[in-house]
Length: 278
Image 1 (cartoon, rainbow, N blue to C red):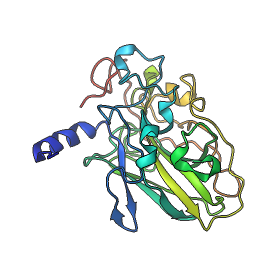
Image 2: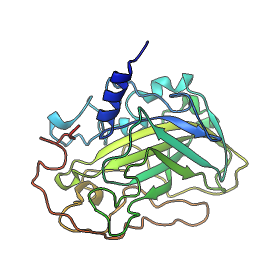
Image 3: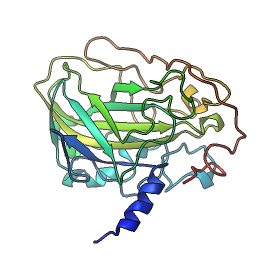
Image 4: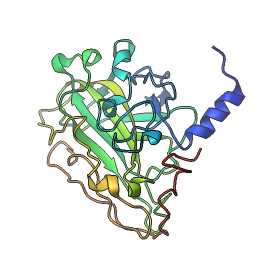
C-alpha cells in the first residue's frame, strides 16, 4: 500500500507527542519495521497504555498498565511467530528506534528489561515469566526545564541499552519502555512499550535479579504514578526493581533535582480531559 508524504508527515506530527517502537539499529544500519520488534495490533499504534483506574475516556483501545498489554503492547504476542530473532553478544548495545520520525516529547524515564523465554523459544513466549531491569535513565540536564528537556530522553528518537556481560546465553524478550509522567500528578502516567526478540550469545553465568512480573510490577499507587513534575524539581522514584548490571544491583537511584516549574491545573499538560495534546 502506498502512503503519501503528506500522510507520513501528519502521522509523524501526531506521533511526536505519542509514539511507538518499530525498528532496531543493527551494525549501524536500520532494520526493517517490525523485523525484530513484535508489532502491536492496535489500530492507532502510538496510543499510550494507562491504568484501568483512570477515567474511561482517557483509556485508549481498552489497554491497561495493570493488564497484559503492559508487557509488549496490545496484541504483540500474536505476531511473535513472524518476528525474527536478533542475535546479540552479551556486552553489546541494543538500540530501539521510534517509528514515523517521532521523538520523545513527554518528560519521563526510559527503561529496559529482559525476560528469558522458556526452552529458549522466544517466538512461543508470551512474556508471563520473570523480568529483570537492565537499564534506566531519568534526568541528565541539570538546570534545564524539569517539565521538558531536563530529562535524558527528551527530543531523542531511540532507546539504547547494553546487555550485561554476565547475562546467560539464551533467547529473551528485550522490553523497551518510555513513561510519560506529564500527567502523573493526576495519577495518569502514560506507558509506551515494545519488545525485541533477541538471542544472547557469548554470555556469562550471572544470576539476574531482582525479578518482577508484568502485570504486577507497576501499580497506580506507586510513587512514580503520582509524581508531579510541576511546582519545583524533586527526586524521581523509578518504578520497578533495581537495575541488574551483571554483578550487584545499582539500585533505583532517583534523578537529581533541577529547575522548578509552576504547578498546573488538573487538566494541564495534555490538552483536555486526560489526553495528550497532539
